[in-house]
Length: 420
Image 1 (cartoon, rainbow, N blue to C red):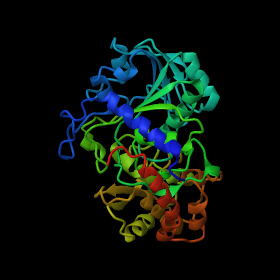
Image 2: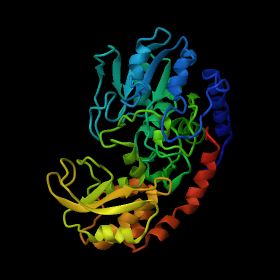
Image 3: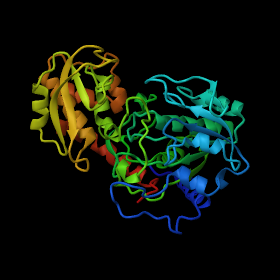
Image 4: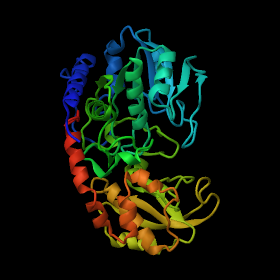
């Protein structure tokens, strides 16, 4: 990958739109000192609203959002915008899990009229290209606004909903506005393997790293500059007060689960590593109160936790754990495994930890197996992780295997960052 002329043009356009949408940046709205809690700035929506929705003036507006699209006082932005005469909100677009968030993984809410506002809600899940463009056309909106809380991992599907909406908006001749929210696990750096294009799916459309370390507005700029054949008319409204080292609690924002199995910011912290267990025959903790923090299977015993603890991985310890999932893998059965306990989140490395847990699970449990469809390759983005672990590689060897591609992605990523 390289920074193309198209990327430079996209960057310039986005920066210009920030100034237009947020004229008060230099007038008392800069970041306060880090406290780890409390109100430290404004989200993209807060800045858009404070400016009287000037960026949307005269347009018929549709919003791609879900339950995370809230204000600081936990009102939904759709309800807020619908009640405000300064914006002409005419449609809502629901992603995976739905606009109101009632569907489980792999589901959506379909097409309906929202009871609270009367607005038509269109289903975007698993729709892309011309079919999604046709939905935007049918909705008669001029501008599509995106406001969804991400979890910071390549395989969390909302960022690919963003990509698909950008592509479809370009096809339909619509403008797209991204309202930024924090990356809950910081934006310090990108980490993990980079997806190979032949493994592209809805859990990874384009070659970015497993933990991307970007906000949704930054990703939109990257997508527009590097991956879209026809760039969309893109505006981004960035946050104030967010720093790349911030975890979610520094924002002072309430946490709303972006999906049913992402209940807390602590879930997001481990997710970019332990979601890899979706590609195995072990439970990734779905059906428990600690998804992605509890991992296990029938027949696993305390040897796994002991082997993982012997690695002395930074920032985390592993407890021998037993649990009975209420749905998904091993529903209603008692399984053994581990619970992750992150004691130093700044030192914790989620992707490396996920690889280490795969390596030690295979070594300590004879029943370990990959999912028959090689879903692990879709999650990691290539065959590298699976084949190296099968060949007996240790954690360091596996992590070393993706460093060259990761370094190349980091160089490209740097050109699209909004927060320094």
